[in-house]
Image 1 (cartoon, rainbow, N blue to C red):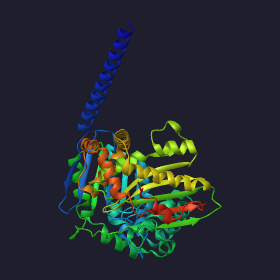
Image 2 (cartoon, rainbow, N blue to C red; image 1 turned 180 degrees about the horizontal axis):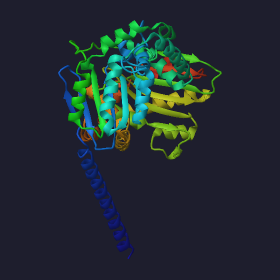
Image 3 (tube, rainbow, N blue to C red; image 1 turned 30 degrees about the vertical axis):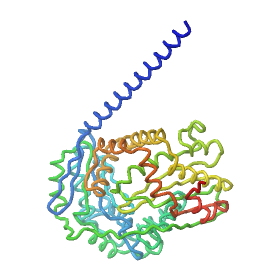
Image 4 (cartoon, rainbow, N blue to C red; image 1 turned 90 degrees about the horizontal axis):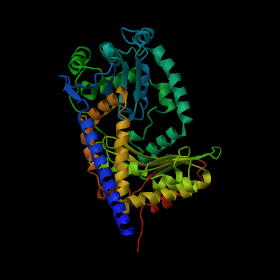
Amino acid sequence: MALRVLGVTQNMRTFMRGVEMIKRHKSAVSLQKTLLNIPATQVTKLDNGLRVASEDSGASTATVGLWIDAGSRSENEKNNGVAHFLEHMAFKGTAKRSQTDLELEVENLGAHLNAYTSREQTVFYAKCLSKDVPKAVEILADIIQNSKLGEAEIARERSVILREMQEVESNLQEVVFDHLHATAYQGTPLGQTILGPTKNIQSIGKSDLTDYIQTHYKASRIVLAAAGGVKHDDLVKLACSNLGGLEASVLPPEVTPCRFTGSEVRVRDDSLPLAHVAVAVEGCGWTDQDNIPLMVANTLVGAWDRSQGGGANNASNLARASAEDNLCHSFQSFNTCYKDTGLWGIYFVCDPLQCEDMIFNVQTEWMRLCTMVTEAEVERAKNLLKTNMLLQLDGTTPICEDIGRQILCYNRRIPLHELEQRIDAVNVGNVRDVAMKYIYDRCPAVAAVGPVENLPDYNRIRSSMYWLRV
């Protein structure tokens, strides 16, 4: 009898495993169908080289924007900060609209107008009702082609930017990442801050702004992207009528190579309660085939915050160690990509006495990635990466941003089902290979701010970037 019951139990377990596999298969098939049914991204190139890209979801709202292939990397030491300054000046009036007229026009539409500057891109975008897309495109085109750049507005905006710089300096994560870029890419344009130094902000004038526009705001370096309730053919006509007069660039923009330097910068300030530390190795550019495995490796290390639940039950080894041994307040792994290079690493915030233990655990996890990472961990990271990828595309604005960035970086929008297949194709061997290539025995860049006396010196950190096994 006992044997018969045991046999039934085993059969039931086998049956339940089969049911679970069928459910997973159905779920995977359902996801595949969903990804395949997402509206295609249509791309059209105008005669002057400007690219128009859109995804029509039939929504009642839309986001439309101009993605420009120029940021602080396109600056030099003398004009560093001009791209961000231009972003501020964009909403201060044009040849046919005063600042008040512009603000009233946008408010009357119920739209939202915004902009931001990164190291490689400048973006101007508007979120509005679908029926107001023509007006939004016309306003955006007016802003980048006919900004007034009045001396009074420049002087007023100068003080606004200087105040913004003070706010950024109080955000220690921003400060650490600026220091990380400054030491990792020292002596190159990527080492410059986006806002620029104070002396440049105080001296930038109309001629600097005009020169930057004339040099970099070329049609072939601009993408008009839209997502939501927008018809592609209508958008192309709007682009022709509003942006068709933009000058085409004769030569493609030169990408100045930015060499990575393993080095460190420490700003010790014992008056701060916590240490803020970032450690990174050189990663790869957007188009490199190693980017997807590095993204999986980055997701595997993960992120954790003391306020989160889970703790000792967390799937991430580093999160589990952080919770059990009180190593840090928070950490996040990052994979920052540029055209031809990148930073792959971790940023953490910890108590002063925990700096040494935290960096030891981080580097132990990195070495484990290179040598002992398991298939189960890689599968978990791949699933999490796919989930995060889909969650980040919730709404017209993030989709529009994804379209604009990918057209600039890849000259096409990678379909979600293709991206999912590329993630699925990553195996444990790929993760170990890229970890050995980019992490193992590499010189890291280190940036630390706060009470960092207990952070090991650079030579000790460097010597822990490999394992000797007998």
